[in-house]
Length: 381
Image (tube, rainbow, N blue to C red; front, side):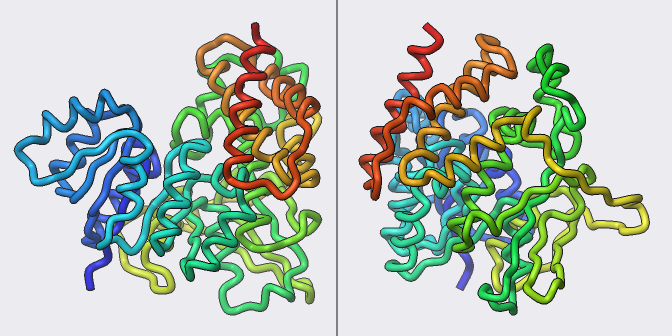
């Protein structure tokens, strides 16, 4: 049977690269979803001829519906539209690459409809990891990581006993400001922050990489993906981005996964697991790698990583609050309304004001998310 997928966030960086993988492997794309970029979405729909196309912005959905009148495709809008793409009968795997907490509800819908999840949306597990993993277990579906770091850990665990793991080691490139002091970061410009040395990503994720919040989100995600205690998750800076992450076992052995800094490789593995397929993507040439180096992350210069560990330690609704505050702060920085170092200051300010809700429901998580966003706005005004 031909594999069939839906892509939530098809016009973003991960979504576009997922379509590259689909072309290479002749995978059927039955559903596409984006927020507002209907020009790119129209082109994707005309190439892949999906059953359903969703646009988060309902007004833009009406425009796209008119544009695609000549195709036999259903165009839907809003959150219900995203849920429709996540639950198409013929689909076996949903790639969730919508940025932010917006990915949570359609991911839960996909799980409810017994779809495997190729997870590229960190915030789903950051905000509601315990609930999501519990529901996936009940539904008997797999959560397959697409992040290069989590894919590396997933691959390094294959064939081994999770109970024999001593720690997992998430590698970080260090972003564009590796080695800079807190003082030196005071004058960082938006353009500098968007200039990642190794990876091509969307603007929000690129800023998260520059602040090291991206790595903090990955720490929280790893806790839920692999069911490990917080103290078993370590972060080291590896500027070359060749070793994507490692697992250390109780006997001292370390398993690592290496590869070119190309997101299509972990995307493909999530879609072909447990098998591997040939592709024409860039391959790693060890003779051209040069030296591989490692450093401790500087949590004084990059306090967002410290804040993520603190949120994980507190647990319950704190990670959701931290994530919401970060999304809003990054949005303000992208609009040049705050400075680079204001991002962790805003996040910490919001976290200190939050009264944790223990054993939260999805509704609790969505409510504290809104509360945190409003508080960021109030802080700025």
